[in-house]
Image (cartoon, rainbow, N blue to C red; front, side, top):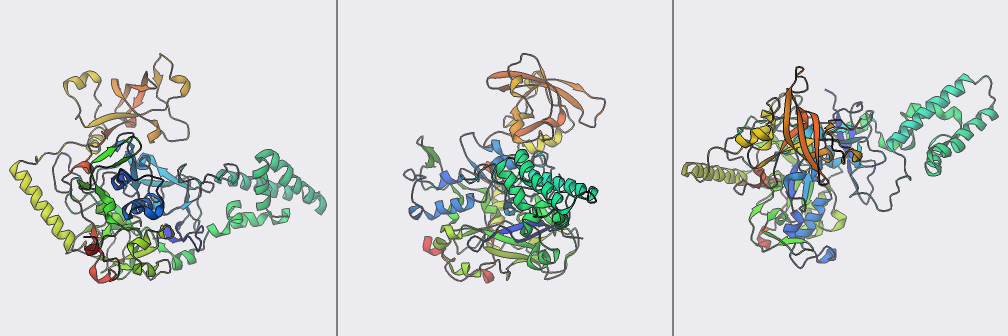
Length: 608
């Protein structure tokens, strides 16, 4: 029953730039899953849809439209598509922004202290939850097919320690020097050094007087350290460690050199329980609602009035940000051809809003985005938090004011509260509001009418997600077999292949290998491939077959042998997944009128 993850004020937070952080509630081993896998919402060419032909990236912030400002706020909190296995949703020259709530969005930035990263394997090998392959239903395209996006630890994390991630090259400060800070591996080596020095001093305490002990310690601390780690890192390490060897035990007592040097990154459990929120009261599962995809379920029994989850909100000042248009490109940048809205981003379905407001609010708390609607079975509701981390004065700010750079952080906070006692394993529901329910009922009615009239077929094309379940054990077809019985046109086969640079120019078949400690099941190792041959295995633990495949790299055709079943996967071809279906349902989730501010946020009439 121990809470495994907490959300609380980050150790990197400042008065000018307040930030939430995620903390370990228990000890985590290296390579352990960190929290529940969450959903990933893909946004396609979102900046291009907000740009006019005359707009440029060099435009002063003050003259940029509210829509563009909204995109720029959102982009600060999104990942590249590789993080969730969606890199090939669009063509290579187009852009995807991926919103992933939970730890992926709230973990602190710290490339040198990073202790968590994406588990890319889980994104590609996601289970089917509440799906009906080949069946048309009104939920098609209304929820993301990119889920099971999991985080893993990259080192041991003690209870109370903050979670840090490396946000990647795009986020790195231009002035940030690679050798100017210590990495988590450096701190591990320092801890080993501390152990060795303590052992040495204890073994020779009878032989060393005070002066000799200090002389040896200073020699190791300054001369040896500079020679081994370089002058910059050597100086940092010597500044971290205590002045006297007798104080080295304090480094161990603190929990290691990292915590000893930065004590603020580790919090007491009492502080987390009183100042933070438990982040693991919810788990993911297939929803009990037909055709609704995934749902959120109670991990443990909860009492009426108990906070089930924190719901920090990323504010979107102008909901026009989700509108999609026909695009053009003049060679310098992509832009919308006209103001005509052709569709809306799937992101809208995961946002909160109000019928009298042009603002949207994206819930960034873990698993909260998977809570489904049921006005009759509702057992939870959203309320504004009284926590100091909620900036209640923002409710009186205009959308234009909230688009200013000083507000480009997560400053709003709601809480998900149980409206009755909830049992462990019970699905959690909220009421999305009458506007959402009316829109959904109208969509279902129209959908069924189109099925009846034949405008839509009752059968639905099998997607890559469906085929990957079928071919977990079924044999992939060879090129010869595909001539007689081809795969659907909208999918492609891809292989996870590790190919060394010096192997590209060989004319001999290569053997399938893995890149050492690193997982091969990441986008960087994914290549289009075709099966030319296969052999059935006696030992079926790794899959029923091994394959010979061909792929092309740098205009060179390569043959790879002994490719295992699990290293081949289907992907939907660009712009063919359900998300691109123009008839898909789109509507924001309603914030109850009684708690929505009466002030300047109610601006829909103003925009009309």
